[in-house]
Length: 363
Image (cartoon, rainbow, N blue to C red; front, side, top):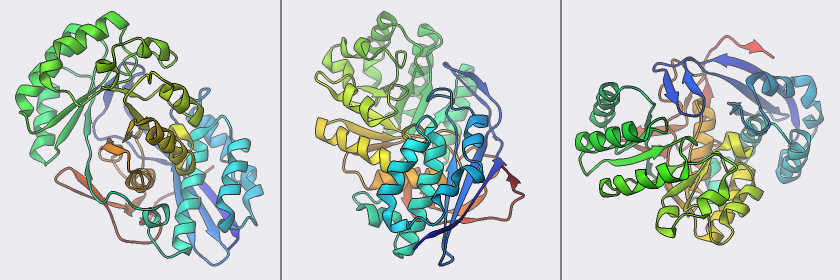
């Protein structure tokens, strides 16, 4: 079945709870670019792009520019059944804009699975059916952080992720207090967002070892892989690579012996979509590296797409797919079910989302 039309538009989604992270400061609002690909048989697939600002500075404006419908006319007339070939051409055409690629990639996968009349995860090969996700607490005062943690625990979340990386002593204090509030039944994770130097990171690891943190995400600058690799193996296996991991080539470099980390954080917006994310997942599996699937501030569209990919991978151990929870609004409904902190997929063709009525700002 051939592609008949492509529409793209920007949606301002807002945030219910602004936050701060070590690498980029305060975040007050969010917008996503929505992609709709229609086939000749009337089926349409949805995707969304949430630019990371990384990947050679893929800003929102740059992402919008490459997703102009006129620039995507080469897709018209392509058969959805040749998805692999389309993705290869997409990677060449939008080489430096992974979030833009992800938006198109997700819409293509959604349309293909709908044509096959099955949920995308079944098309990919389902392994998991239900996993807990963490919910993230940005950098804020100790009192605000603990209060937010209590709210999340009260609503059923089984895992909390704390943004740290601005001050070693404050980081240790907040993690220690958080464990007291959360008790032993709630998992704790931390994300340093490239905020540490080597010696301070080792101090943090040693002084928080009794708190049984699940992992420590991206302690060093993205290009400091050798610094991660220089750490003892007992530390490295608790490290998650995030900003260091965009491509399959990055994955291979991180996995090279001795591996620089024990966990990969795969984000569709960094990798360029489902197709390339699954290639990274295969590298991880061959190297014995666990997977966490993460996100930006994203619509349910791309969060659900990541969940389908995650559930198709045996190496998936963690979810951090909370990117739609704090949006003031969304453009779709459906996709996944969240119950007591666990995520599962709705039993519908494609990724299982449907557009709500919205005012579309055409690109």
